[in-house]
Structure formats: C-alpha cells, structure tokens
Image (cartoon, rainbow, N blue to C red):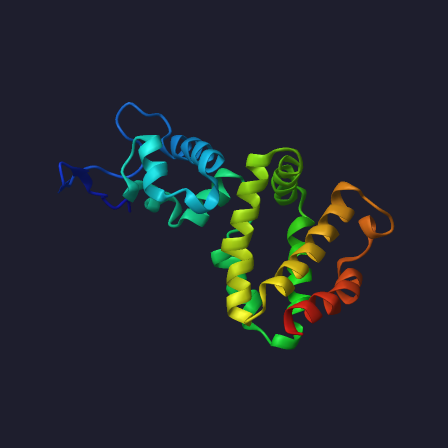
Length: 205
C-alpha cells in the first residue's frame, strides 16, 4: 500500500500528495536519479545532501527518502552499483573477527562474479581512472560509507583500512580489467585462501 508523503509549502505541511509520480512527470524516480548524478558530480559525495538533490529534482526531500532511504542509497542507485553498504556490511562484520579477511574477500569475489553486478562497478572504476570528478566521488563514497564504517566497527587504523581496500581494489582490477591469468579464471575459494590471510593481517593486526 502506498503511503502519503506530506508536502511542505510556506513552512506548513500539506497532506494529500502521494509519493511516486508527481503531476506532469512521467518518472519521478528517474528524475531524482538524474538530479543526484548531477549533484554528486558537482559537489562530490560528502557535500551532496538529500535536500540538495531534492531541490535539483524539484521534489520534496521526503520523496527522495521514500525511494532511497539514505544518501548512500541514492548514490548506489544513481551510479548503478550492485550493493548498498548499509545492508551488506553488517553481516560481513558480524562474524568471528579472525575470519573477517576471508569473508570480505569472498564477498567481493562472489559479488563481482555476476557480470550484471560487476559491469556498473567496473564502469565507475574506469571513469575514476580518467576523470577527476569521478575519482572524487568514488574516493569520498568508499572512504565514508565503506571504509569508515568498517574501520569503526573493527577499530582499525585508517592506514591499515586503506591498505586492505587497496589489496581488494587491485584484486578486482587484475581479475576483471587486466584479466591476468591464471588469476582471472581461478576458483573463488582458491583466491580466498590466498588473499584472505593478507587482508586479515591488515584488518586485525
């Protein structure tokens, strides 16, 4: 059942407007995503806000929250990423501390094994390699929404956290963009056994 999202006008909330398609708009969600891409490109991830994205799209901020919940959710949808850190990180971090390195590596390799999930992420990586705006967005998103959360949950110093991320980033680049063999076609569990202990050392000391 669709819930009503009140509209703000002149400082007062006016009921009766349903979230979704606004009058004269064929795709409100698509317009929000287009506005989000523009705002993220101009301001970066850190300085972009839900209110600013809503203003660019010409909608109430409550409508953005209705569709995407958080700023991270907007970014993931706008950039067509296959994961939302707020949903995938808690299960990874909830297990035994001594196995977190293996869980992280296994998750990254399993997620990127699906071409439909992998290609949008690799596209963003390729853009970041040649575009300063893109690299700023990627850096801020991962530093805030991914690395920052993991570092806080595991009490890992920033240098160690970034080194672990560099290991994983290089693994994905080598396996799927450079396609070095035999790494490109190696079994996931074989790579987990090889790389997991290294990532574990970064995260657990």
